Image: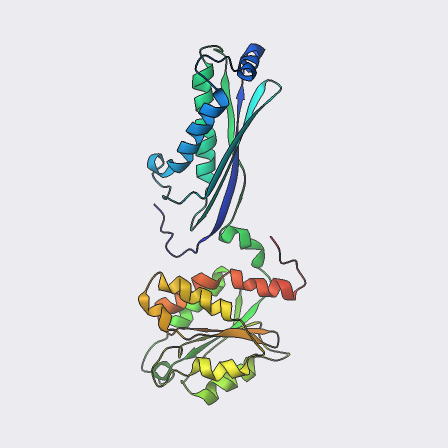
Length: 305
């Protein structure tokens, strides 16, 4: 079973379909008239399909148990076929396409079981996924926008050469995954003057699109990154770091102690991340690629969907 603990909860949707072909037109008429010996085909198969959706993880080993928030099964007769459509919604870390297909398959199999006594030539046709929505794949159009970034490591020990940087490298690896070019990478001490100088250097008309600071967001006397950067922002975006802290709190109770801020200075988005490697990595997982939506809007692209 894949590890999905790094993913965020989002609305996941999937629609699947299945078809059943009958060999005798009288079979369809029996369904319409409610004359199938085993009972109401559509209602019985719908109930079985709904149970199948909920029990998918019990029978398919790699499927994660997840909370089904909505499920609907609709069956109708068209020509010589029965068309089954299944829609499933959940707010979770992984998609529901297998649940939708499992529901379609069991709905079709239940119909087959109920109809085979009166139609020996009945066949289950294609079971397929029609569409899915939600998760990081939904934001693939946020990748490849030509975003340029600078990563600034705020650390007395790293800048003095007493410790190697890991958090900044973890951030760079995550940016590579989303095709964000890291054009600058630098290490500075936890000094307000050095932080202000970095902001000045990497913003403005010739600045980068994305400026990430790592370190100095905690509560030690030398942690001064948030209070140094906050007054420099033209527009703060509180929800960004609220989302990061919420994500982190699900993984460690210390996430609430992070004082990171985020906002715009000119055309540059500035993010302040924790100095710990895990904290930096988890903040990146919480925010990317979603935060890149800012640059889609800046480039005049639609921000719906």
